[in-house]
Structure formats: C-alpha cells, structure tokens
Image (cartoon, rainbow, N blue to C red):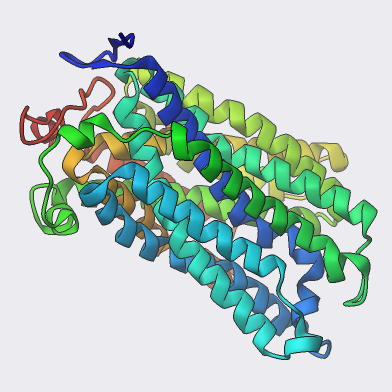
Length: 453
C-alpha cells in the first residue's frame, strides 16, 4: 500500500512521493523556463552583431536588441492565456510537457541559425520570430506546472515552497552567466568573425535546449497530474469565469498587485546593471560578478519572504513590503545614484542592497496569486493575473525616457519605484488573507477561495 500523509488541508491526504515530484517538477520547469529567458539577455549580447549589418547606428542596434528581448515578453502573456485555459480544461501535466517541448525546440533552432552574412535581413527576422514563438510556449509552462505544485503542497509550507520556486530565477541567471563567462574565455568575442560570434554563443542555446529535453525525459514518468484537478468539476470557459464571472474581483485585485511587483522588480533588475556600466563606469566583468552575487543573496531573500509571509500572513507582508519599497527602496536607489558613495565597492554594495530590498518580495507572488483562485480556474487566474499585469510595466524604458526630461538621472526611476510600491500596498489591502486557505476540489466541496472573495 502507498503511504500517504496529511497535506495540512482538512480531509485531504496526499502521497508524499507525488508531492515531492510535483514540487520538483515545477522547480525544474521554472529553471528551464528562466534559463531560456536569460539566453538572449546574457549569452547573445556579445554576439548580437552576428545577426546585423555592420553599418547600423548604435540606436538601431539597441532597438534590435530590445525587440529581440521584448518578443519573448510579448509572447509570454499570449501563451499564458492560451495554455492557462487549456491546463484548467485538459490537465496541468499535459500542458507542462507540451510547453517545455515547444520552447526547447525553439531554443535548439535558434542555436542553429545562420547569421546576416548568410541570410541577410532574414537572420534577425528569424531570431525575433523564434523568440516570439518561444515566449508563447514559455508562457504555458509556468501557468501549468506552478499550480500543479501548489495543489500538492502542504498549506503550512506553501510560503517556503513559493520562495524556493521563485529562486529558480536566481539559479538560472547564475548558470547562464557562468556558462557565458566560460565560453568567452574559450571563444573570445570581438567582431562578427570572432569565435564567440561564430559559435561560442550557440553552446549556451544548446545547453538551454538540452535542459528542456532532459526535463521531458525525466518528468515523462515522474511528473504526476494534479489530484485536485482530477477530482474537480471542470469549467467550460475558465477565462470568461476569471474575467467576467465570479472571480473577476480576484483578477483585478491580483492585476493591481502584480503590476506593482512587475514595475518595481523588472525595472530595477534592468536599470541597475545599466547604471553600473554607463553611470558609474564600472567594467562589464565586475558588473557580471556583482550580479552573480546579487542573485545568490536574492535567492535567500525570496525564501525568507515566503517563510515570513507564512508566519505573519501574505496580506500583511505584502502591504508592509510595498510601503518599504515605496519609501526605503526609493531612498536606497537615490543613494545608489547620488554619486556620493566612496569607492567602487560602496557602489557595488549599494546595487546589491537596492535589488535585494526591492525584488525579494517577489518570492510571495506565485503562491499568493494561486491562492486567490479556485481549482477549476487556478491556471487561468494565475495566467491572467501574473502575465497580463506585465503589459504596463514592460514599457518602463519609455517611462524612464519621459521622466528623464523632467528629473535628473539620479531620480528618474524613483517615481516608478514609489508607484510600484503603492500599487503593491493597494493590491494587498484589497484582497483577503490566504495563508491558511485550504485547496479543495471544486464542484464537490465548497472552495475556500470563494468564501474569501
């Protein structure tokens, strides 16, 4: 007989082996997901000229780089909406496997792409197109695998699990950064004919694809389907239920909260490295090592946030941290940009403090959003609340340009940090407390989430 243990939810007992497999599968899937996201941001940057004509202006080159990265961001919400609904209708496990297959194939194909000298303008078109399709599949992976993990998780440990899962972001960054540094030593970068431009960058993409296929081979037999989903009544139109039905208030509350979280974390993660290089004039190698240290510390920040939220409550934790970000986060960023710090080490230390202080709260994001929706629409609610909220923050670079016309460079990001913190506070206070929520099958037992809405 298979051993079972209490999940911490009344009336529910879960096979601990299936629980471990579900949580491990979500972590592995997110790790592969984030590796794929970081590939163009880290590994492809030294070789982006391979896909472009040599006589482009710096402004156009920067635009092509931004579009290459943005193509994935645009694809993610589309994939989240498509696959999130499918995960609620046909199952979490199946959609996880389909999504990982899709983005692994796209990553492999990018690794084989010829450059501008062979294909002309089609080289960059194919790169951007594959990154867009890649983003669609990436958007499907986390909307299926993450709810599956939480539906197996002991409710008393969901905060810890949420922090650990968020740490896949940091682990992926470290892996790709270290691999890129190694490849730059083996195959130095330079012009379009340099070893790194010709083949060095491809190793990282092949590594990303290999991680995806390894996940598929291992999880094909070891990734369980959600027992809660199997026992739940299915909703004919999960997206409609989330947007216009009984869960619409939960969606808009999560949308406001996540808009604040994305605005602060994504903006800071992109702006601080740029300011280290271009404002403080610190060399790229030192910046890279600083970001590696930042992500190691940030991993601890994610886990600590999840654990603390389990003790004091998600609502209180998010509201307090939103206020901390709005006030202390803004002050810390201003100090980092003030030019009054003594020495390079002080600047680097300040950059670590800014990123960890503002971004650590994200360790609570996925668990809280999943707690806000019932089992029959959890993937759809997670997909829409987590991904659609990316739309407004994704234009942060344009906001910075506009604010740059009104404020000195040391202050341009401060209004965005403060606004993001305020939105986190509003979103947190708008919603209920969820840390003790019991996940139950819908249609047979009343979903606790509905009682909280």
